[in-house]
Amino acid sequence: MSTAQEETKALFRKAVERASRAPSIHNTQPWHFVVRPDVLELHGESDRQLRALDPTGRQMVISCGCALFNARVGLAADRVVQVDRLPNPAKPDLLARLTVLDEPARWTPLVRLDPMIEKRHTNRRDFFDQAVPPDVIYELINAAEQEEASLVEITTPEHKVVAAQLSREAEAIQNIDPGYQAELQAWTTTDLRRADGVPVSAIPRTDSRFESEGLVRDFDVSGRGWLPRLRQSSLSHCLMVLGTAKSTRSAWLRAGEALQRILLEATRLGFVVSLASQVAEVPSTRDRLRKELGLDFHPLLLMRIGRAAPTPASQRRDLNVIISESGD
Ligand SMILES: Cc1cc2nc3c(=O)[nH]c(=O)nc-3n(C[C@H](O)[C@H](O)[C@H](O)COP(=O)(O)O)c2cc1C
Image 1 (tube, rainbow, N blue to C red):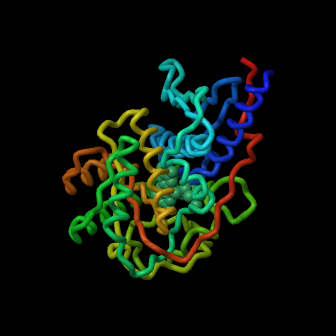
Image 2 (spheres, helix red, strand yellow):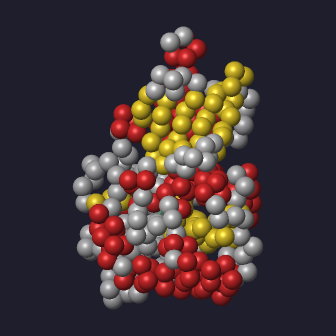
């Protein structure tokens, strides 16, 4: 292997390290990377797809899009990168191919997001009672547009109530399915050293005396959540909806890249985010959300944005488990 190839390999390992810290549905980390001499491949790992929650694989592909964005950020300071998305129709799990070009990198806004990768964590706590300034909202919308996705703020109280009600309805529909419940149990963990799954240290306790507002998914299946029970109304927080014009695998991948760009920008600007995708996981509530909010795109998830006390990081799988190397 030439020195240039050794260098590229080292860059790819760094990119995968950045990618591995991405958020993913239930922290399933449904990705695998193949390092080739000049190309880094991102594959979806369908063994990690949540079959009950995510029969179409949409959440899995969005999660992989988040990892792809982190890989792009990890390479941005060093080299110009060409990204080919879904390059082989015969291999739908080959989601992207990254090739580093023989050009020195120019500065791009991705470079300043690299230090945010470790700082970002999903924050399911109550948020402080502070408005999100319009310039921050503008930056987040711009981040989504840069990645060909749409992000809009849900501003009216009526629409916020609709979003919360539909989320609650979606979760009620999901909870009837024993398969959904089993996945929730399997992917919520008290073992804080486990390399995947949502740790109880990052979920609020739920209390049957208080009806959940639907915006924070109820992970507390066995009453083990460590964070304090939510007290405030999430409806007073800044609420945004992310979506894409098309509902295809390639649009979902782009949505994931947009999601991670938004999350890292929010982190850079000093804000935290909590995600709620249940409303889009159930076809009937997804359609109604689109209709009742008058959205001109397919909604994919809701985001609550604000400031809050920190929450601990969740674990990630070891790099050696998610990378394989190939000589050709
Ligand atoms: C596509 C997608 C959907 C998600 N949906 C939810 C959700 O509905 N509720 C929630 O609390 N977290 C949701 N999350 C956040 C994940 O649970 C979180 O990223 C994962 O547990 C890893 O934790 P971290 O984000 O703190 O690194 C979602 C993440 C992704 C990428």
